[in-house]
Structure formats: C-alpha cells, structure tokens
Length: 256
Image (cartoon, rainbow, N blue to C red; front, top):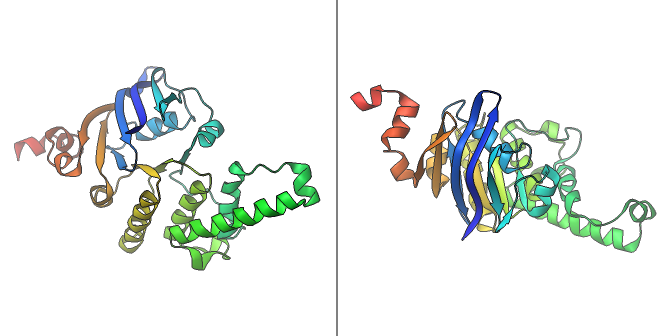
C-alpha cells in the first residue's frame, strides 16, 4: 500500500530548477532512501514533502489525501515528522525533556488547565512521560534519560533528535542525513535503531550520503541528479545502474 505518493513534483527558484518532475511512492512499512550527488535536489524535495516549501507543479499525497500546500505544523499533525541535517536540540534540557517537547504536539491540555494542575493535566503529563521513556528505549538512549543534551556525544544526539521527532506520533518519518558525522560504531547503532523504528510501525524515508548505510537498510532507493529522478529500485539494482554510476563517478564509469 502506498503511504506517500509524490507525483510530478517540480520546484524552481528563478531560473534554477531544483526538483524536476519527480514521482515515486513510499510503501507502508518500508525504508526508502533518496540519494544523489551534492546539488541533486534532495533537501529541496524533503522541504516540499514536509511543508517547508511548496512545489511549483505536482502533488504530494499522504494516506490518499493531498498534503500539498499544508504548513509544517499541519503536516506533523497529519502524521509526518522529520529531522534536519543539523541537530536542533534544546541543549540545557535533558534527553527526556527534549522528547517531551516533541510530545507537546499531541497533548490536548490547555494553558489554564496546565497552570491549575488539574487532574486531567497530571494524567496527560504522566502518559507523556511514559511515552517519552518508551521512545528513548526504542532508540537505545534510556541510560541518557536525565543527561543534558549538551553532554551527549554526537551520535547519541542524532538518536535523540529522532526520538523527539517520534514523539509527535508519526506514521511516516523523513530523516535528513541522520548518519552525518557518525563513526562506524555510531552508524551501526543508528541502523539498529532505524530497524526497530520500522518494526514499531513507522515508515521511513532517508536522505543520506553514507552509501554503506543506504545499501544496508533500504528496501528501495530513489536516485536524483540535477533535480531529476534517474533511477529507482532495490539496492542491488541501483548499485549496477549505469546512470547512477555516471552521476556519482563520471563518464569514466562507462569506459571501465
């Protein structure tokens, strides 16, 4: 079943076409990667999918309903979350508190009820804390629950940002360069966390430069080059695709 449908999406900036007539589906329960050389249009496409930018042409549908034109906070409420290339954590807050901030998007208590500490508020806060603790366990950060984000190693900060995005209750999560700056051990830990998240019922779309990680975790890969989709398929086919080799390695790939 297609959870996300991207149809003929184009985004121009003046005379520059950053995304050019791109279409693909993301199936429920899968991990789909979007790859391409620098400047291929990956980040622009992510921004279009999550409401941070709007397409000049084309549509984006989620669960059969159009998502095009929705603002980012509305996209989150529809069940689509994302992370960013650079971690954007609250440094002075603990890991648990950072995840609780993400959970705020799903809380129903108003300001007055929270200020008066009404019984419903206390119950909601307790449930939110339990969910935050569950998500920290899911990404393998339970031991860091009470540690300030500023004190956490880079790889764990990446996982914390993923946990915070999960706290919004998504069905689909888009991860922008989650392995950036990670060493081999941290990347392996990330891969394990992504499998657990997928198995917990969250479909994943990943923009990533680490080809080892992409080939390991992906069910399908979309390849962009200069804004256009040049290939799509399972990792074993993408690795051998001549257009992909040309985009990454240049004309010499053909000569060899």
